[in-house]
Length: 239
Image (cartoon, rainbow, N blue to C red; front, side):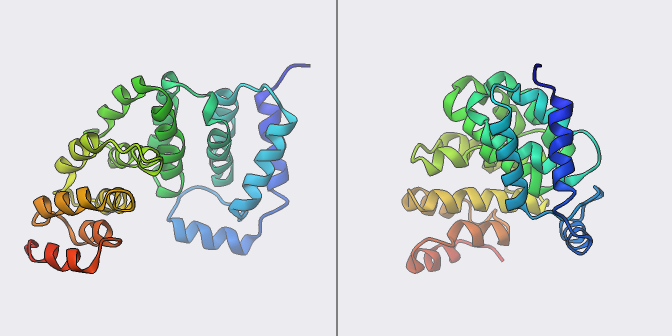
């Protein structure tokens, strides 16, 4: 009998239903400010269940399975779909970014958006240069979660010491005047990660744009820079 994405998905959900608590479900729903329903399953348990399902369904169609898991209004289903895509991201190509983009648009929350952007889309782009054609479009999308995702897709390259500073500059500069917190935070986050590898670039870029940066962007960008550099950069701020 061949792989059935619906059956495999429902098996995962059935097991997850045994692992949650009403108290945790209420806490997570409140913390994530989500309209989705929650079972209250800890993320490590979701990962464990998904890993076991992958082992039991070798050769499954990852994209179809993830889409089936994502369907519905249950947060744990969507989290399981994200964990599946993360675990199997090496099988995905630039053509699969259309599916990832659709999920990001539906996610509308950092807990699902961020791993889809950094751990899935960004990893695809590391392997397939043509993926950047799609991600380059994201940075000026009307949906701020998609714009945030363009920035976060740069993280895998930074962490593997293959930073794309040209794209970082291209993506981040137009967003410096945005009021959206999640965009402001993402700019600073990417700069903070880059500062671990190339503090000189981050110091110089921040000096050029310090007067345009929001407080959260500046604080994140400078968090790991030497104290004397931070003091110098503060002098370029306009409060």
